[in-house]
Amino acid sequence: MTSKLHGVCDSKGGPLRLHLREGQCSDFTDADVVLKDLPPAATVMGDQGYDRDKIRKMLSQQGIPPCIPPRCCCCKKPVHYSKKLYRKGHKTENLFPD
Image (cartoon, rainbow, N blue to C red; front, side, top):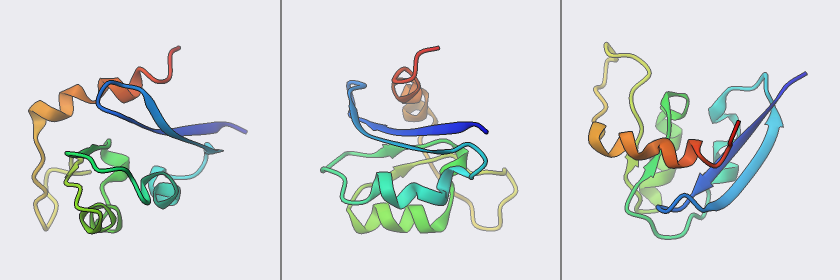
């Protein structure tokens, strides 16, 4: 059995929330646990595993625009995100050193 650690960090890379769950689950299964009631933010970045309408709706209800790339390039409804901003997403990855 494996595990996954989901995290939310601030713009400087400091951890805000961490959530541990079994590794066999998809990323968005518990997204509401880590993304609910976030402090005010300019944007939330997530990888393609978080590309779901439910997550985008939850963030927009909080007034936070998502920066999440689409799961595929040929989706029926195109999703726009800032590639330049998304490159800064390494700060979240840096929360979890090897």
